[in-house]
Image (cartoon, rainbow, N blue to C red; front, side, top):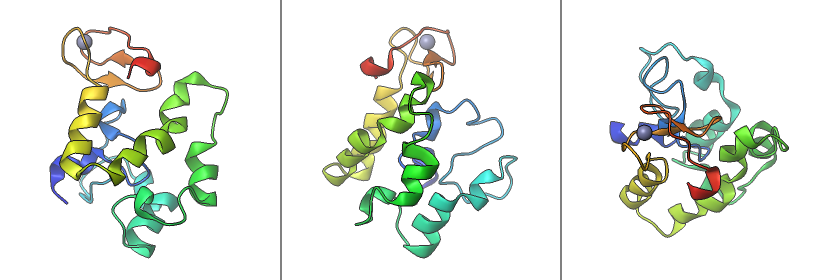
Length: 140
Ligand SMILES: [Zn+2]
């Protein structure tokens, strides 16, 4: 895949909205070994999707959402709104079945874009990385 799509993690998380992106991490889809964030190499979801199933995204798998992604991601921190970006994945990810990769990529960029300055909204706190403006997750 093209590097521009490195922000599209196999599990459906948009890495561009992660506070670690462009600091220690180049995105979960990146295969570049020259990055500090190493947890991705051992991620069970990533390994299953890329190495076992040979897919680019879990949504392309007929077992989605499987036990692994439920346990590791979708059902984690269920009562904590900071993790809504995980809980919403099945609803958002499904668009990749009707959109091209380019369309889906642009859709994610727009969703996580700050209305005030055009910067990127980060998950957990749902605030702009650039100006600090908040964006409610239900507006994203
Ligand atoms: Zn902003």
